[in-house]
Structures are given as structure tokens and as C-alpha cells.
Image (tube, rainbow, N blue to C red; front, top):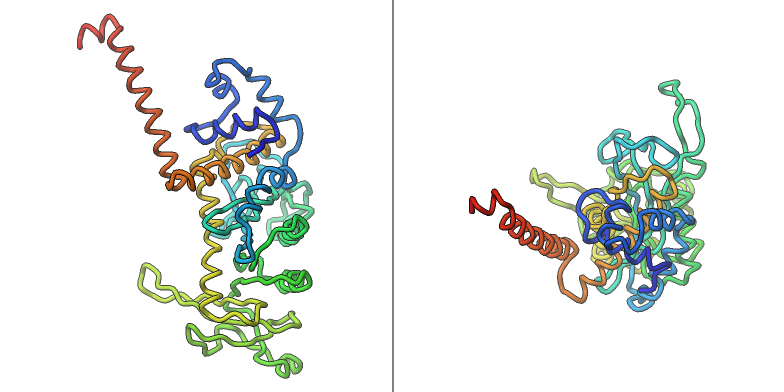
Length: 361
């Protein structure tokens, strides 16, 4: 991997081995003063690093693994930073999993997956730069000039402009809007996305013309069947299927999937959509293994560049995963154990040389 600067290469290595809060002072100490705290800080604050710079690093790796069987997954994640000062980036976002707003960082990412390898290829950190009056509370709140749906389309367009090869675009129901379906169709690409049960469909072109739509949950469809449907607001037909999961309480949960690939059968749709989980694994790894939210930096530029380097650390772990046949968490545990062994041995030496502890031993 060719990095944008030697300091960024060192910093992303540091994020892999570090435990707890990540800061330039500790990295400088780890390098035994080879680079000063100020030098590292200036490098992190030298410019804004985003999707263009991420692509320049991962492009050679993507080219090695890409094929027409790859998938492009999109999703956003929120990392809570409750005790940081609020700004345009660290602010309040609605978390659909928690069903409430949390203060933190909201990022949407495009992840390329193929041949057992996951690589982030584009991303956007949500900045809420505008203030409006909330109609419910009558209090001021921050909003973004650009919606997540617009960011999704921009990142998708960027991926296509970068000549990324893939079979399907995968995303969750948050991105399964009629506008996004139309956008992807116009790009001549295929998607697989879930629909919420209250979305409406027509079962034929004639029913569509008559405006006879019915909710998805009212359809009598067995798992493994496919139907040709017209989603309300979408002019072209989609292949529709139902997938049933058994949850921990042993009750069944249905997921309704649609694709504009009319040649796909239910097994194909189910198999490929399961790969969307790779972006959830990405989110989990950057938060657990590469210090994604561990920076105490207060400036937007330094904080966002730390997030950028956290993703590059993920790419390094992904390469190490292939060569060592161990997942990110196993690699992190191995590095942590080695660090503990070194600390343990150092402590034994200190105790042996201590006039009180050494005598007691």
C-alpha cells in the first residue's frame, strides 16, 4: 500500500496496536521522539482527506480483487461521542436502532466486497452546518445542507466514475426510495434492497396504470417465490421475493427484497443480499480494532482525518487477515497479548530492582 505520507502510515499502524484513547503525544512517545507531537499534529491538520484520497490508497487493492461478481454495499453508522464539545460534525443525529437522537459522528460509507475481501472505497461524514427551528419542539437544531439520500447517490456515482466493477448495489431499507431505484436504473446497474412492509406495489402493468396498489404485507407470498411487481412511484418492474428469519424468540421475521435484475431467482437474491452484512462487520471492526472514535481532537479537520486513517488501518488489517488466516479481532488480540507480555516482563524487572519489592520477593 502506498500512503499519502509516511506519518499517515505510522499513525494508521499506531491505531492498530493502540488500546484506549489515541493521541499524538502517545504516538510520539512510541516512536521515542523520532517525530514530535507537534509534527504529527500538523500533519493531521494539514489538509482535508476524504473519498478521493481514500480511493487513491485502496484503488490498487480493489483492482486486484474486483470482478463482475463483486458487490457494492452502502450504509451509515453513528458513533456516539457524548462528552465531546458540539460542532458541525460532532452533533445530534437520529439513531434508528436506538430510536432516539445521540450526539456523535454520522458517516455513510461505500464498501466493496469480493473474493473474501472488504475494502472501503468512498465515504462521507455528515456535517450539519445549518440551523432551523424544530417544528415539534420549537427549538433550534442543526441540519445538513445535503440529505443522506443525496450523499448515497453522490458516492455511488463516484464509485462508477472510478470504474469499480460489481454485480449488485446493496443497502438497507433506509435507501430503498423510489428516487434511488430510478437513479440506479438510469446508471444501468442492478440493486438488491429490502422494502418495508407498508410499501405499496401493483401486481401488473395494468394494475399500475389503474392505480391499484396494495401493501406488501397483504401479499400472499411463500418464501422462495418471486413476483414481478411495480413499486409505487417506480415506472419499471422489479423482481420481488420474501425471506423469512427465525429470531431468538422463535418467532418468524419476514424481509421483503426487490431487485431490478429480472433474471435473478429467489436464491440469488437471498445469497447476494446476505453480503450486505459485510458493511456491518466493517463498522464493528473500525470501532473495536482501529480506534475510530478514540481521538480526543476538538477540531473538525483533525477529528475527521483521524476517522480517515482509522479506515486505512482497517484496510491494513484486511490485508493481514488474508496473509495470516485470522480475522481482525484475532489479530488485535494477538498484538494486545504481545504488548501485555512485554509489560509483564518489564514489571518483573522493575520489581526485582526495587529495594522493597525485590527484598520481599
